[in-house]
Length: 348
Image 1 (cartoon, helix red, strand yellow):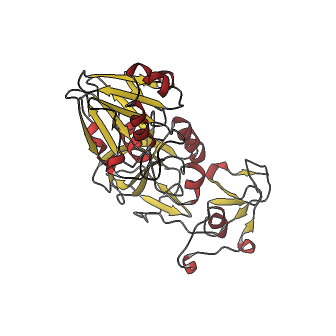
Image 2 (image 1 turned 180 degrees about the vertical axis):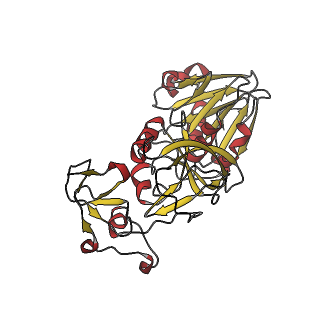
Image 3 (image 1 turned 120 degrees about the vertical axis):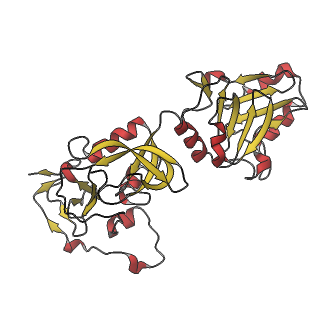
């Protein structure tokens, strides 16, 4: 895991890239500031120090070898003047306490400088060495790096991510989260900066009527462009739900702009909610391995309480979808063992 970012000009990095880097790699941040050639260490959550025009080489750590501790943050000293950053794992180096990167730095300290590239590039990792005295740095396995707008990244999984604010079944831990967002970057929870009407009629719908209702509770994720297309398909954007950008006040005090799905086609009941809480059926509970301290908190749905319909699943073409009393606008497919929502439902 981990990621190394090299920015040697005065450009500003995209804030979402830094959020993703810190969220995916939460075990420490080491920065070599290229204007002063000094190293400083931070917590990953202090990523805002990189929202700057200053040039730097930064390493966000995800611990694989060696304990999680400040002293195991990169870079590591090779000698009095030179340091080593690494992204990737070198097997058979390090132990439960010491990282494989520190072990590699010790190896480099024992061999001539001109042999470093041969040793480092034997491994399927990305490396940077920097000479603090001469104020130079070198990349290794450079073909495995990604260049974007003049900035070098040791991997691409933090790039081109889009913030999405969700308020219904996509919220963390809810049924559609497991299908769509469990592998995306969870930024945190918050609420819409403006008030909107959240109408719950089995499923939740936020109507695009700014200033009406409440500041709606949301979870914010960073998703890839392909995942955004998946979400658009789920929500029926733009004919059923319509995706628009809104301001979100995060619980940690930050403000971000994120996509949010509105639905103005449903009836405005005049009953508005601040938050949506999903009821639990035995189907989504068993499939997602949900653990409950108190089983009485579950709202049990017996299969025989679910009504047959003349509706068809668009995925498996199974006829006779089941109407769940806790989800009036959704149908349960016995074949797929999943819910079908809104305008996805077909008739036979």
